[in-house]
Length: 237
Image (cartoon, helix red, strand yellow):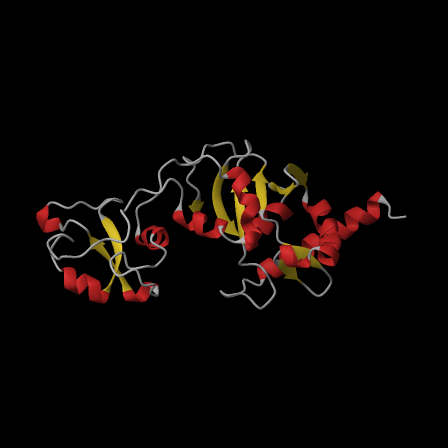
């Protein structure tokens, strides 16, 4: 039978191993199977989503006991400290290896939690989605809003639907992704003037579009429980 002292010692060893892995400062992307670049949703003390961080940062908070793991199981929220989560990881690796990303060291494997909660942070999340190139590309899912084709970010530009020369503003409803060819064809004209049509009307997203994309992945379905209020804006850091 395992004593409390043995459990504490094992957890301390696990924490030391995690600290050693974090101290390696692995380049991006990290070595195959490390899982340190997986994304983790962060909640404040009031269970409100505030940001998304890497697993590397999440484990740093867990090891220092600044946060706890929140696991959603059959609609219930379960709270685990780092010690308990490291122990549960052994079972999850045996029975649910595909449902988690993993950090693997010489002595142990630990599942990357999908959600963590900060113990001492109760500020409310920002309510406005930042207007920037990254979020625009994410909202439009890297598709030209004129021809509808997908392109890598390097082959897309930001187009003013109503050109600045005609009073167009820098706003969610006036900026879209456009490929080089369509942008050149449109020039300094409106779509109507250029006999072109948008594939969809540009809108201000209700939540960070990068979060919406990630929610489409089955591994991050549990995030939906904390992102069901449309006014929440989760910042990626």
